[in-house]
Amino acid sequence: MTGAEPVCDLPVEKREKLISIIYTKRAAFLIYYVIAGVVSGIGLLSNVTTAAGFVIQDMPAWILGMTALFTGAVIVTLIEVKRRFTLYIITTWNLRIRRGIITRTTTRVFYDEILSVQTSISADEKPALMGDVRVFKMGSPNEPALVFKSVHNPEGIREVICRFIQSTPQPLPWSHIKR
Image (tube, rainbow, N blue to C red; front, side, top):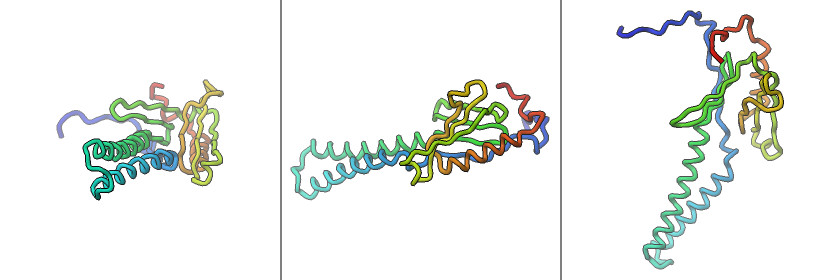
């Protein structure tokens, strides 16, 4: 083997373990998907009617139809990029929100810093079984430190987090990490 192997002085059972990676539900962006579908549908209908001869075949009509198709595809792509590149991560040591594609930012709160965990489910989110999970830190009890937005089963996620908070071992296995 070449190169230096990483040295970890923690036994395997005391290392951080990934519990879950959660994404925002697609239902949270439903209106944008509908808009993208309508715009793409208009572009497709424009091109079909132009090709069938119902509309005068000229360059502006073709450009408008293609622009509408392209715009619908771009809207869906942007929605999926935003949804896919926002990760809500639960580990055995902390909660994290990771955002971004090129420049990733990670916000993390360790379980011993958490003051409370709350959920908020609005009336329009309830049928889709989604809502927000708000995590409050001890230093700022009025402002949430982390918000898992539009996630599936927020009550279940809150319960998992609360169980990790209650079972936090002493001494803390993450005490060696700079905060």
